[in-house]
Image (cartoon, rainbow, N blue to C red):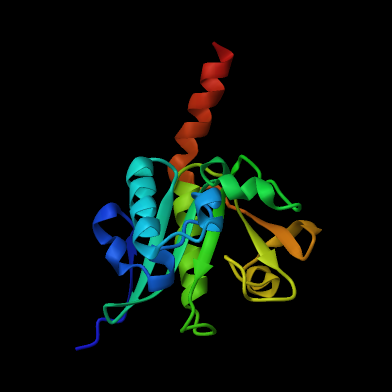
Length: 192
């Protein structure tokens, strides 16, 4: 019986559901250790500690499962959570945005799974009060953490800055009426 496409939120208890490459990737969380090319087991341990330490914050991750098998992953948070975000010459990402550090759908490209992951991330960003979603994309290659510029442009993202082969891309989010009370609360607090 086919289960179809499902998404689960990343937490320490389901790190084993990540695509194999992602479970040991600490590029965004621990750039110094990443450059040391750690043993896989050490990298997985660092990733688990980092995820555990950031649960309940703006950090998030979505694992895409097709019929129960992992086919992709998207990792996101406010940009200060990712030390490597300041290393890109087209950055840094804006503080009012949720930053997509990686979007990894290696075996299932071109089937709409990445777009569905991004739609979920955009909804979560709006629910958390972010004004936009941003990411770094690459013009000449799909081999980068979040994919090519063309993918993001099709999803409504625009280039803010482009340097050294990378672009900082941004999509403004529409206001969610469910959270309008937050805006009135902050306005009232300023009036006092």
